[in-house]
Length: 149
Image (cartoon, rainbow, N blue to C red; front, side):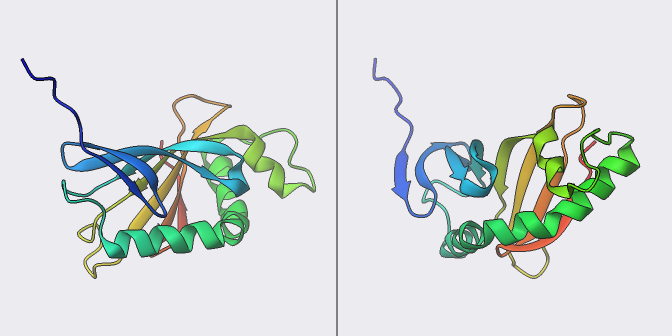
């Protein structure tokens, strides 16, 4: 009996990806967050599209700016959820110490009506395991922070 082997791609900017049914999986390090995320790319067996690769490339090149743009909205999401870390006084960047990078999801062109590519960076909360806020980008540009609860 033959053993099924999943297709594997090595594709910039994603790196090594393994195909599952209608998505590709891998791991991805974004330097601004200093820890690997699980990576899911919504794409068929032929691999991620050039639009998905372009959106991911832009996210990678602008990740420090995206993180900076997301800091205050991330604090607001925590405030609304009643999960404010104690060490934020005068140090808004400390919000990231209460979050653990978990998953990057790269959507296909059907996510938005206009064909832009959504990329969500999802975080696990160290304050409440049921709280998973996310940074939403479109074509690699910051859009908003989602509360994810």
